[in-house]
Every structure is written in C-alpha cells, then in structure tokens.
Length: 111
Image (cartoon, rainbow, N blue to C red):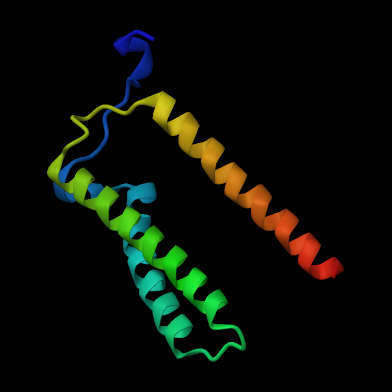
C-alpha cells in the first residue's frame, strides 16, 4: 500500500496539546482508574491465586501500553501522522478481545 494511502489527512496532537482533545484526555482517567484497579486487585482475596495473577498481569500490561502510547504522543514520535492500517488492526484486536470475553462469560454462566 502506498504511504499516502496508509496515513490519514488529520494531524495528531503532540506535547501537552495531547491533553486538550477529548480522546487523548482519557489518558488521565486511564491512569487514575488503572491505579485503583491495581489497589483493588492486590487487596482482594480470591480462592484461586492464579486468577488474581492473570487479572493483575492484564491490568499491568494495559497500563504499560497506555503509558507507552501517552509517552509517544508527548514526544511527538508519530510525526503528526496516523496509520489507518494500524488503527483498523487495533479495532479488530479489541473486537476479538470483547468477543472472547463475552463468550467466556456465557460459558461461565452456563456451567
């Protein structure tokens, strides 16, 4: 695919301008609620510790990914361009996570 077709026409914010747009402003809430999740997971008592470890791993991984993405936006590593291919791929991966979670919940409720 040609580079011009893979990058969008709009520019992404860099530096502290990241905190002035709504989607990027959600980074702050992700940090706050991510910290609260860590506290709640670490202080809970579960019968199978493996479950708690998996949830903590997932939470920490998402927090690290969010922190890395915020850092990349702050330093302007994206060069004010976005790759729509990566964005479509990200939506597909997120959709797969949601579908997996829904079917796992259905299986758990039926057992």
